[in-house]
Amino acid sequence: MIIRERLGRFRLRISGTRARLVCRCERGDLAMQLKIGVQTLHDGIVVADCSGRIVFGEETAELRDRIRALISKGSRIVLNLADVTYIDSGGLGTLVSLFITARNGGGAVKLARLTQRVGDLLQITKLLTVFEVYDSEEEAVQSFRQGAAA
Image: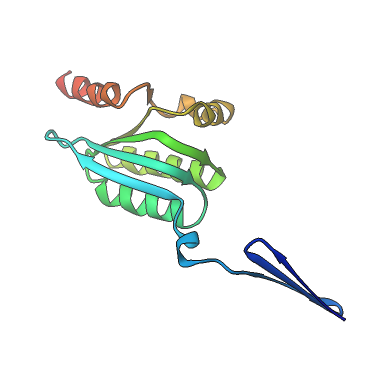
C-alpha cells in the first residue's frame, strides 16, 4: 500500500514500512536568514548592522567570517542588533568568540540597540556582564571615541 500526501510545500510518501518526506523548496526559500551591512566610519570604527536570525550554521559562519576579517590590531567594532529577531546557542557562542578574538587583538566588540528578546537572552545567560551594551549605535561609537581621547 502506498500513501501520498501533500503538506504545503512538503510531500509525504509512505510505502510499507518506509516513509519519505520531500521538501519542494524553491531556491529563494534556502536564503540565509541573516543580513550583515558593514560601515567603516572616518575614525576607523566599524559598525555592523545585523538583521534576521543569528543561528548555528551558515548564519553564524557568515557573521564570524565577516567580523573576523574586520578585526585587526586595535579594531573597534559595534554590532547593531536592532533587527535581530532570534539568537540560538550557536549565535551566542559566535558573539562570545568575536568578543574574545577582538580583545586578544587589542580591540573591542560592543553591542547596540538590543531587542527585548535578545536583551532578555543576554541577561538570562549572564552575558550582559561580559559585553558593553548601548541603547543606540551613536552611544556605542561615542564610547569608543571617549576611550581613545582618555
